[in-house]
Image 1 (cartoon, rainbow, N blue to C red):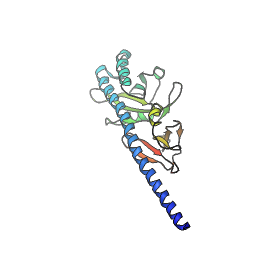
Image 2 (spheres, rainbow, N blue to C red; image 1 turned 30 degrees about the horizontal axis):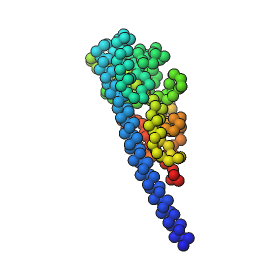
Image 3 (cartoon, rainbow, N blue to C red; image 1 turned 60 degrees about the horizontal axis):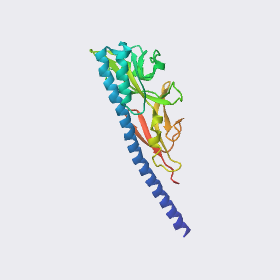
Image 4 (spheres, rainbow, N blue to C red; image 1 turned 120 degrees about the vertical axis):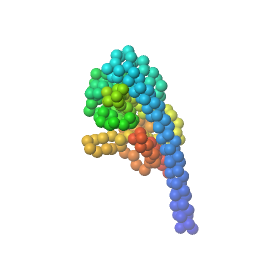
Length: 231
Protein backbone atom coordinates (compact mmCIF):
# COMPACT_ATOMS: atom_id res chain seq x y z
CA UNK A 1 0.00 0.00 0.00
CA UNK A 2 2.83 2.41 0.88
CA UNK A 3 4.51 1.80 -2.46
CA UNK A 4 1.27 2.49 -4.34
CA UNK A 5 0.75 5.68 -2.35
CA UNK A 6 4.23 6.90 -3.24
CA UNK A 7 3.63 6.17 -6.92
CA UNK A 8 0.32 8.03 -6.72
CA UNK A 9 1.95 11.07 -5.11
CA UNK A 10 4.73 11.11 -7.70
CA UNK A 11 2.14 10.95 -10.51
CA UNK A 12 0.10 13.80 -9.04
CA UNK A 13 3.22 15.90 -8.57
CA UNK A 14 4.21 15.35 -12.20
CA UNK A 15 0.69 16.33 -13.32
CA UNK A 16 0.75 19.45 -11.15
CA UNK A 17 4.13 20.52 -12.54
CA UNK A 18 3.00 19.87 -16.13
CA UNK A 19 -0.16 21.95 -15.60
CA UNK A 20 1.81 24.79 -14.03
CA UNK A 21 4.33 24.70 -16.89
CA UNK A 22 1.57 24.81 -19.52
CA UNK A 23 -0.11 27.73 -17.79
CA UNK A 24 3.20 29.62 -17.51
CA UNK A 25 3.81 29.05 -21.22
CA UNK A 26 0.40 30.46 -22.14
CA UNK A 27 0.83 33.46 -19.87
CA UNK A 28 4.29 34.15 -21.30
CA UNK A 29 2.93 34.25 -24.83
CA UNK A 30 0.06 36.55 -23.86
CA UNK A 31 2.22 38.96 -21.88
CA UNK A 32 4.95 38.97 -24.53
CA UNK A 33 2.38 40.00 -27.12
CA UNK A 34 1.23 42.79 -24.80
CA UNK A 35 4.81 44.07 -24.53
CA UNK A 36 5.35 43.72 -28.27
CA UNK A 37 2.35 45.96 -28.92
CA UNK A 38 3.70 48.50 -26.44
CA UNK A 39 7.00 48.70 -28.32
CA UNK A 40 5.20 48.70 -31.66
CA UNK A 41 3.30 51.83 -30.61
CA UNK A 42 6.59 53.48 -29.75
CA UNK A 43 8.10 52.49 -33.08
CA UNK A 44 5.15 53.99 -34.95
CA UNK A 45 5.86 57.33 -33.23
CA UNK A 46 9.55 57.06 -34.08
CA UNK A 47 8.73 56.53 -37.75
CA UNK A 48 6.51 59.60 -37.68
CA UNK A 49 9.34 61.69 -36.24
CA UNK A 50 11.87 60.46 -38.83
CA UNK A 51 9.59 61.62 -41.64
CA UNK A 52 9.00 64.99 -39.99
CA UNK A 53 12.74 65.48 -39.47
CA UNK A 54 13.41 65.52 -43.20
CA UNK A 55 10.77 68.18 -43.79
CA UNK A 56 12.15 70.66 -41.24
CA UNK A 57 15.87 70.16 -41.80
CA UNK A 58 16.87 67.57 -39.21
CA UNK A 59 18.24 67.89 -35.65
CA UNK A 60 19.53 71.44 -36.24
CA UNK A 61 16.03 72.83 -36.85
CA UNK A 62 14.63 75.38 -34.40
CA UNK A 63 13.18 74.20 -31.12
CA UNK A 64 9.67 75.48 -31.83
CA UNK A 65 9.55 73.30 -34.93
CA UNK A 66 10.47 70.22 -32.92
CA UNK A 67 8.42 70.86 -29.78
CA UNK A 68 5.02 70.22 -31.28
CA UNK A 69 5.90 66.96 -33.05
CA UNK A 70 7.81 65.56 -30.09
CA UNK A 71 4.96 66.39 -27.73
CA UNK A 72 2.41 64.78 -30.06
CA UNK A 73 4.57 61.69 -30.55
CA UNK A 74 5.02 61.24 -26.80
CA UNK A 75 1.32 61.72 -26.09
CA UNK A 76 0.42 58.97 -28.54
CA UNK A 77 2.35 56.25 -26.71
CA UNK A 78 1.50 54.68 -23.37
CA UNK A 79 4.32 54.36 -20.83
CA UNK A 80 6.68 56.75 -22.62
CA UNK A 81 9.36 58.58 -20.62
CA UNK A 82 10.77 60.99 -23.19
CA UNK A 83 11.52 61.43 -26.88
CA UNK A 84 14.97 62.75 -27.71
CA UNK A 85 16.77 64.00 -30.82
CA UNK A 86 20.56 63.87 -31.26
CA UNK A 87 22.67 65.22 -34.08
CA UNK A 88 25.21 63.16 -36.01
CA UNK A 89 27.84 63.63 -33.28
CA UNK A 90 25.54 62.28 -30.55
CA UNK A 91 24.74 65.65 -28.96
CA UNK A 92 21.15 65.97 -27.70
CA UNK A 93 19.58 68.94 -29.49
CA UNK A 94 15.91 68.51 -28.57
CA UNK A 95 13.98 66.46 -26.02
CA UNK A 96 10.71 66.32 -24.13
CA UNK A 97 13.00 66.02 -21.07
CA UNK A 98 14.74 69.44 -20.92
CA UNK A 99 17.22 68.29 -18.27
CA UNK A 100 19.19 66.23 -20.79
CA UNK A 101 19.40 68.72 -23.67
CA UNK A 102 23.07 69.44 -24.42
CA UNK A 103 24.30 66.10 -23.12
CA UNK A 104 26.16 63.64 -25.33
CA UNK A 105 24.99 60.13 -26.19
CA UNK A 106 27.94 59.37 -28.46
CA UNK A 107 29.30 56.66 -26.17
CA UNK A 108 26.03 54.78 -25.78
CA UNK A 109 25.30 51.53 -27.56
CA UNK A 110 22.06 52.68 -29.18
CA UNK A 111 23.71 55.73 -30.80
CA UNK A 112 26.74 53.76 -31.98
CA UNK A 113 24.53 51.10 -33.53
CA UNK A 114 22.26 53.59 -35.29
CA UNK A 115 25.20 55.66 -36.53
CA UNK A 116 27.04 52.64 -37.94
CA UNK A 117 24.20 50.74 -39.58
CA UNK A 118 22.81 51.55 -43.00
CA UNK A 119 19.47 49.75 -42.74
CA UNK A 120 16.41 51.54 -41.41
CA UNK A 121 15.98 49.23 -38.43
CA UNK A 122 14.63 49.75 -34.94
CA UNK A 123 17.30 49.43 -32.24
CA UNK A 124 16.61 48.66 -28.57
CA UNK A 125 19.20 50.09 -26.20
CA UNK A 126 20.41 49.20 -22.73
CA UNK A 127 18.18 50.03 -19.74
CA UNK A 128 19.29 52.98 -17.62
CA UNK A 129 18.04 55.05 -14.67
CA UNK A 130 16.00 58.19 -15.26
CA UNK A 131 17.39 61.60 -14.25
CA UNK A 132 14.15 62.71 -12.63
CA UNK A 133 12.97 61.54 -9.20
CA UNK A 134 11.70 59.06 -8.33
CA UNK A 135 14.39 57.37 -10.40
CA UNK A 136 13.23 54.37 -12.36
CA UNK A 137 14.65 52.23 -15.14
CA UNK A 138 13.95 53.22 -18.75
CA UNK A 139 14.32 51.12 -21.90
CA UNK A 140 15.37 53.22 -24.93
CA UNK A 141 14.43 52.44 -28.50
CA UNK A 142 15.53 54.44 -31.51
CA UNK A 143 15.82 54.97 -35.25
CA UNK A 144 18.21 56.77 -37.58
CA UNK A 145 17.48 60.27 -38.82
CA UNK A 146 18.55 60.82 -42.44
CA UNK A 147 18.42 63.62 -44.98
CA UNK A 148 16.88 63.52 -48.45
CA UNK A 149 19.94 61.65 -49.71
CA UNK A 150 19.60 59.04 -46.92
CA UNK A 151 22.78 60.22 -45.20
CA UNK A 152 22.90 59.86 -41.41
CA UNK A 153 22.19 63.15 -39.60
CA UNK A 154 21.22 61.99 -36.11
CA UNK A 155 18.91 59.80 -34.07
CA UNK A 156 15.50 59.85 -32.46
CA UNK A 157 15.03 57.77 -29.31
CA UNK A 158 12.02 57.06 -27.17
CA UNK A 159 12.16 55.62 -23.67
CA UNK A 160 9.67 53.10 -22.32
CA UNK A 161 8.96 53.02 -18.57
CA UNK A 162 8.62 49.38 -17.46
CA UNK A 163 7.27 50.37 -14.03
CA UNK A 164 4.24 52.02 -15.65
CA UNK A 165 2.93 48.58 -16.57
CA UNK A 166 2.90 47.38 -12.98
CA UNK A 167 -0.89 47.85 -12.47
CA UNK A 168 -1.66 45.59 -15.45
CA UNK A 169 0.91 42.91 -14.66
CA UNK A 170 -0.13 42.98 -11.01
CA UNK A 171 -3.55 41.65 -12.01
CA UNK A 172 -2.05 38.47 -13.50
CA UNK A 173 -2.68 35.51 -11.22
CA UNK A 174 0.57 33.58 -10.88
CA UNK A 175 -0.01 32.37 -7.33
CA UNK A 176 1.22 33.65 -4.00
CA UNK A 177 4.91 33.12 -4.78
CA UNK A 178 4.81 33.50 -8.54
CA UNK A 179 6.36 36.44 -10.36
CA UNK A 180 6.10 38.00 -13.80
CA UNK A 181 9.25 39.55 -15.18
CA UNK A 182 10.90 41.00 -18.29
CA UNK A 183 14.56 40.70 -19.28
CA UNK A 184 16.68 42.91 -21.51
CA UNK A 185 20.26 42.39 -22.72
CA UNK A 186 22.89 44.60 -21.10
CA UNK A 187 26.53 44.71 -22.16
CA UNK A 188 29.42 44.68 -19.69
CA UNK A 189 32.53 45.17 -21.80
CA UNK A 190 32.53 42.33 -24.31
CA UNK A 191 30.03 40.27 -22.32
CA UNK A 192 26.25 40.36 -22.54
CA UNK A 193 24.11 39.62 -19.51
CA UNK A 194 20.37 39.70 -18.91
CA UNK A 195 18.99 42.31 -16.53
CA UNK A 196 15.32 42.21 -15.69
CA UNK A 197 12.45 43.38 -13.58
CA UNK A 198 10.07 41.36 -11.48
CA UNK A 199 6.77 43.12 -11.96
CA UNK A 200 5.90 42.79 -8.28
CA UNK A 201 8.72 45.06 -7.16
CA UNK A 202 10.26 46.39 -10.39
CA UNK A 203 13.81 46.24 -9.05
CA UNK A 204 16.72 45.00 -11.19
CA UNK A 205 17.49 41.39 -10.39
CA UNK A 206 19.96 39.26 -12.27
CA UNK A 207 18.76 35.96 -10.81
CA UNK A 208 15.99 34.22 -12.75
CA UNK A 209 15.73 30.48 -12.32
CA UNK A 210 13.33 27.93 -13.68
CA UNK A 211 10.87 30.29 -15.35
CA UNK A 212 9.21 30.24 -18.74
CA UNK A 213 10.74 32.64 -21.28
CA UNK A 214 9.43 34.05 -24.52
CA UNK A 215 11.98 35.96 -26.61
CA UNK A 216 11.22 38.53 -29.29
CA UNK A 217 14.24 38.64 -31.60
CA UNK A 218 13.16 41.97 -33.11
CA UNK A 219 12.88 43.75 -29.77
CA UNK A 220 15.70 42.02 -27.91
CA UNK A 221 13.55 41.65 -24.80
CA UNK A 222 12.15 38.65 -23.03
CA UNK A 223 9.02 38.23 -20.97
CA UNK A 224 8.13 35.36 -18.72
CA UNK A 225 6.42 33.97 -15.71
CA UNK A 226 7.56 31.83 -12.85
CA UNK A 227 5.12 29.75 -10.87
CA UNK A 228 5.82 27.45 -7.94
CA UNK A 229 4.27 24.00 -7.89
CA UNK A 230 3.03 24.32 -4.30
CA UNK A 231 0.48 26.99 -5.28
